[in-house]
Image (cartoon, rainbow, N blue to C red; front, side):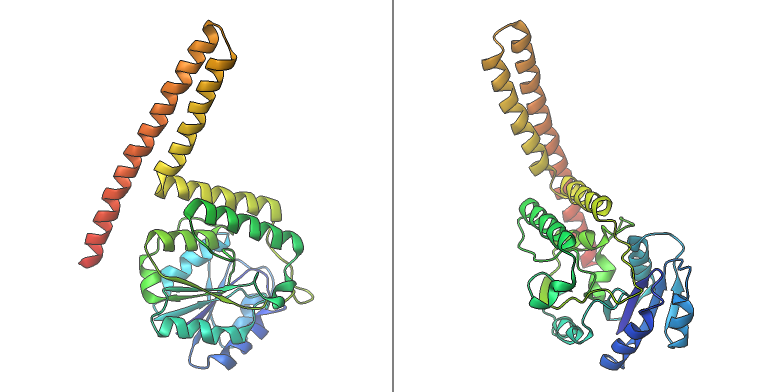
Length: 288
């Protein structure tokens, strides 16, 4: 088992995070993945006898990709280095992996009274993005943006990751869905950042990137849904143009929109068929 801690300039909290997790999980290896910190994060981690791996490519997603490439443990605990997550919650999360109840366990912050450490705007945005993902992928998740997760070795081996920024938590969840992995959520508390620790999340910019990631993965994994929706919209616009614009231009526009609607639906059908073949191939490769 290992505890992996992605960090960027967390000198005020990293020592306490390492000490707390070492106390709860004395058998676990502590690995700090330092994303080009300019403060004493790396030196403090080394003084706590943690292994420090430097990741030069900027972004939390890049760090998690490095974690998945580097770590070979049977159970991997992923936690931020800002001391906002309750360390004692790690035990029920690890138990789920050890018992084979899940491939990934997520500590959810939004359903507990102890989750008040999150700023109201971040809480609202989290609810909004989680709701959008649930609507698009027909799921019932509570918190897709939590940075407190536990993975099985099988999960790490079979989940491809592409995003490089704060979208990584969303991608972890969506890729797990597509790979038919079992995901379990466990309610946890969430503390305010300690004095001297600053969030690297840019609320609106990173929120937009997360929203875009959901849309892109929906297009990639469920093209028929998104192209059918676009085709239906164009079909309604075609009918509207035909009924409301009673001239030659209106008729031409209506026909063009209707043809485009059929074209978009056809694209969705073709891409969906290609995806099905890739899923079948992936299943066969996993059997080898």
